Image (cartoon, rainbow, N blue to C red; front, side, top):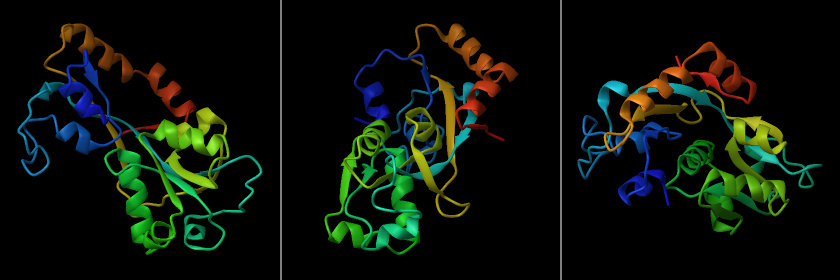
Length: 202
């Protein structure tokens, strides 16, 4: 289940920090009605800002048994099986953008070379366990799992991976939530974010 659905299902949340603007926009009444089609209103607008940026990367298991070294390799016979995120999660949408832009999305799809994870952690786990030849995940997840990164999406290959942050208007602790978001913007937190692969959003 994608994060907006958790909130709609009654999850007890104070702050929302998704891995894409789309998921935030789906809950923000002030955004384009073509994105927030149900005109949902869960975001305190004055609290919304862009927090950090991540990178979309191609990760492989230890020793890289399939000898995959680039996104372009995903359209060749080197690939037997790749794990991608589902379309309804940000990493899946970014993955599709990259492969479609390279003109190779149809090749692994038509050859049943794709398995899907419901979130980026599932994709990371499949790569870590060498259940697949590779997976498209975030730089931070590769760092946390100790995975080898063989390629990184360049500017223009997919949208920037910006994590917006905001306090939810259903929060029972709005002032504490605002204070916590302020803390995330301190130099101390910036050092922690950058140490694991994020950069602070501009």
